[in-house]
Length: 229
Image 1: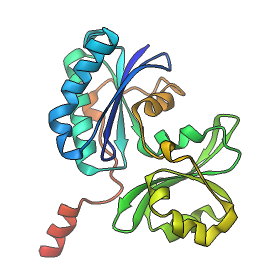
Image 2 (image 1 turned 45 degrees about the horizontal axis):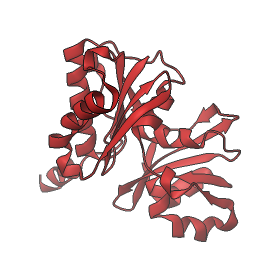
Image 3 (image 1 turned 90 degrees about the vertical axis):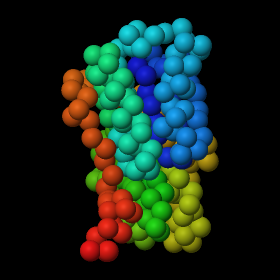
């Protein structure tokens, strides 16, 4: 099963061709403002130049559904939905938090996945794995780091851009009970999203229009508009 995976949840973007769970090739883009212009050409170059595969040769698409950058998610979801409609292939939306948590699926400790939500908040969820199998997952939330630590309540492995952004506070509060993933594991990636999908490859949506972003909170524009009224 050949899957095109696309992540635009953070400042950079990542795309990958994954065949039966094995990454074939991957490309990166930087600069959130350029995603709308560069994302589709990046996909075309990777498929043609790196893999020799056309869009019709794919079996489906996987994309980050959020939480994350409002602009980035809109761009990524719009492009993937367009490709799915054009090719008649199914699409699956994967949680950005799942994408980073599953990288730690062999951890013995509870895994607290955190993405930096700015405004002094984090998108987070708590996971428990056992020998690479997900045993439980808490609710996805946007909260302060203080609330996130209260939710964890014990020794945990922290991963994600939110954990990196608030590492000093976490260490100050938890001391040696705070364990951190390696820095290179702190960002969502397209292969990681595909890895999550292949844990249950039946989670496709036949209708791309049914795929919607998960923001967890209102955008700055919506908040500012409400304040101005």
